[in-house]
Amino acid sequence: MTWPANTTRDHLCDSDAAAGFEITDDFARFDQMNDMFTRAMWDDTVKSPHTDGFFASYRMEAAPRRGEGFSQRDFALRNAAWLVSDIISNRGADKGLREGFQGAIENDTPVAPMKADLGTAAKESQEIKRLARFFGADLCGITHIDPRWHYTHRPDTKAMKPVPNDLPDGLTHVIVMGHEMDKTLVDTYPSALAGAAAGREYSHEAAIVMQLAAYIRNLGFQAIASMNDTALVIPYAIKAGLGEYGRNQMVLTPEFGPRVRFSKIFTDMPLDIDVIHKLGLTTYCQDCTICADACPPKALPKDGPKVGSDSPSTLKGVKKWSANCEACFGYWAKIKTDCAICMRVCPFNHHSKGTLWYRIATSRFRKLAQWWAVRHKPDRMKPSTWWASR
Ligand code: SF4
Ligand code: SF4
Image: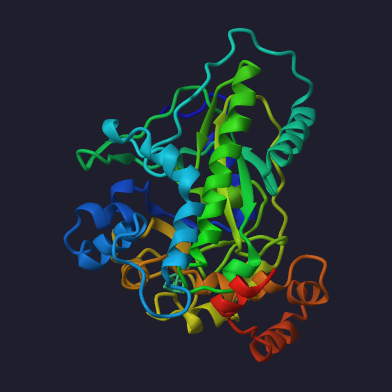
């Protein structure tokens, strides 16, 4: 895609500092052929009977087993929660397009030929946020489009080869929406049951992002609905002011901590962008290793942020905490479901904005909050407790 006409590299780089991004000269855009899910489909160093079994489990093939949280009922709920998302992502299978994951969601409605009369950019931004909530989003922020975060290529999932990942010219803004995952389900990670929290939000966000994009197209502006496809959503969510980057590789939000999924819309609608405020969440992570300590394959770093790694699945040229993606996905493949232990154990999953603990954790007295959090780690909820709850 071409650089948007009304944005400049300097403008984007200015907000890097506010977002806490340190980008080095060897930065390179990410090729989606190298993300772990895609590599598990073509890279023989990743693909294995375990990874094949992981994908097959979403079709109920030989996944249920003894062990609480991994019964046929647990997998059944997880797979049912994914259903709407699966319908969208599978409808372009013949074209090698896995919408929402390995390709943007195709426009189901055209852009109206007449542009609606708009109010100011500030007013329209407020209206977009109100409608995001109306459709069911829990968070919404807006930022400039930034091609650095866009994948160089996406996989053609039929031929399993890289194809261009182009968006139309003229797009200027990205609307980022956050979708809260169910806390009680997240509290049962690791389990197939817990995967229903992820699946339910993917299904929700598919509907929400498509509906809001259709609204914008009906106003006469371009709107490309996107989930995990097309661009890295983490830098966009941070630039849209929704949270800060955590040691567990997730965006920590004041409202839900890391327990949130994100979707996005690329548009040319004139909008105001959100201001990035320092929240103190990344600062807290600097002296906390609860997630890294709890990770079964020890895939999370315990030391400070670094630039890159040897893995092709790590973004190059950005100073940040990076997981050992191979070890992490290897664990997912072994248990035949997603793992988010590092989400469950994070204190910001349990204590949101407004609580006393949160206020202390994001203040200069954070060491007190860290001391308390280490001594009061909530236990994992048993899946049988979740099923028995009403
Ligand atoms: S998802 Fe699980 S395996 Fe991966 S980094 Fe988090 S705790 Fe570790
Ligand atoms: S567990 Fe601690 S280090 Fe990990 S993301 Fe949460 S606050 Fe940060």
